[in-house]
Image (cartoon, rainbow, N blue to C red; front, side, top):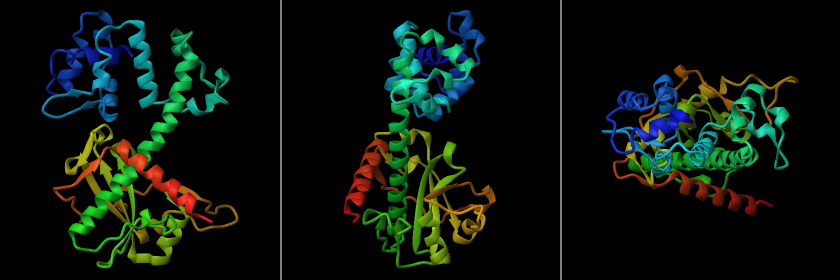
Length: 310
């Protein structure tokens, strides 16, 4: 928290040209503690979370800038809220039971580190748990919808006559269907650099992959960290597009046996060599709503799909 404060404070009145200069400026604050801390991990975390946008200069978000004035208790509590939101500890969901904090499920070393937050600790952890659940779900849905709309625009640019079947129903086992090209059934996944190593695949998606074979293709759209807080998404927010053929995907899970079988979904982590660079290109004119708005759209679509089921 002290590191986050000094990093924010170092950008309060002076812009920093790059990460190295920013970390050096934070270390040069007028306190012994500022010089003693390694600020690099916290700086990278703030960039990954989209709270600082790298570019011609390091640009702090309004939320981070608001925490840069004075290192008093309200500010430090707000920084604690922020850190627990963007990097929740793995024990957080387990430690909250029926809206109560179960301290016996928190590792003793972590609990000792958090002790200074009392008497506010309960409320901070409850708030963080609720935020983590809502935020992670909304971000994941928003990234997924942004990826689908990006791939749809890329296929439309190729005059492949795409149909966004995921907006009709979630039962197809893929998101977009086209009438041209070798791949005609596209399952789309969205990610950031931190989540690019794996994705969730439903049982239905896997079954359709097996059913349509070479016609089925998984495409993953990777977004830059700045996309998470951008007011609108453009071509510049897309870092990479990669594809996974049905054959490569089908080779990953083991065959179903008495000891392994599919249920509703699985987390798939392909080897890096299994991915192929996509030939799809993002149209220059692409402009999408924010990840937050897209996540809310996806929630509305999900509710509509559930309502339409018998």
